[in-house]
Length: 468
Image 1 (tube, helix red, strand yellow):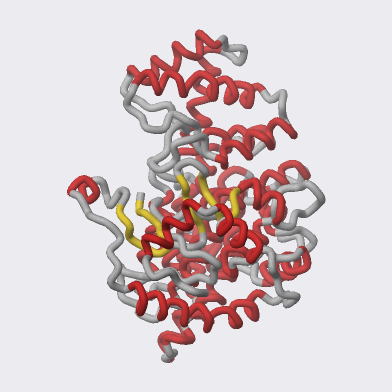
Image 2 (cartoon, rainbow, N blue to C red):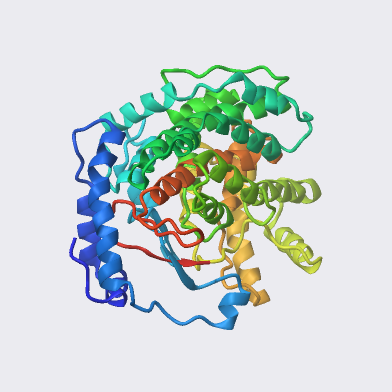
């Protein structure tokens, strides 16, 4: 593609010209008939390596802005730090995957059935290639992932060495670390491999990791909550449906929910702890297993992935104290009680977004379609009406609107997955798709300097990412 003479002009055009955005979407729908993802990447990679060379040559000295003390103290908030292309978080529009919003992904990505939720395999293909796959390509990728889903016995033994009462995220991360023993990248690097070939063993590790984590995660769930009775992979099911099946849920609506859940939790730009950690650790040439395990440890924090379990627990505390038929006034009083005690209302607010999180919106639409009479969903709907005005009145938050965590726990709870302590593991499985995509991108870089990596995935536009 032809680069603009100025990076700032490019950013301006991306933000202001709808015609360019339309052309981006047109390019993204152009797909090859090749069903093999590896072949697609092999074809695209030389072009993208040249693209990075040209970007550095023509724009390497362009200044991207000023750095203030506030930015440094605030943990690089608002600072341009990385070139990030798999997803872009807009304060007003929310997340876009390769330029496509969540509603657009729901419309164009292949589903298991007409009008159904997008298959996570389709999003993985989109993140890696910048192209919307056909149903045949998604089915082929789904089959490949199933073939890679075999987990060695020593992984389960490593998990079994921990107390059953250990936190699910601790057990999950332990299992991921045990998977690292089979890392193809680690073996290739020890034998000696040219930089231009780094992407090949990284691809093998990333795809295997994504395929294996539902098996490990479901083992943790069944070990803790279901007396260790393990369910085998079903070779007839796609990625999201199989994950639900492995957990012990075969309701078709639960399978649809898991497809949606994994898709919308997969990637959310690079400023959040898990995405940034995975990217940072991979920059040291740590293999995908090590990088993802590090990301999971960040995800396990109360201010990141644990937030979804806190929301459900808080909602249940509202019901315990006020009953399911709580009035608007009672709800207002409870919210003020929470705030006046020095706590926050979990599930509301976001570091970047300034409107309702579209990931919340699509989950709400799912609930309206499949479980409109659920009492906890009705309470979530009341919270949507009551909480933002109170937070606005409080005057201390920039974004009073609900985020993704405000809804996910209630959906899972409705279909029988009630163990809130486990919810972050579901988040982690989803993030394997985003982290795997990001780690693979680093292997394509021509200058692998730790802490300063450029993401050079195939894409029809450049996304200039601000750490937030």
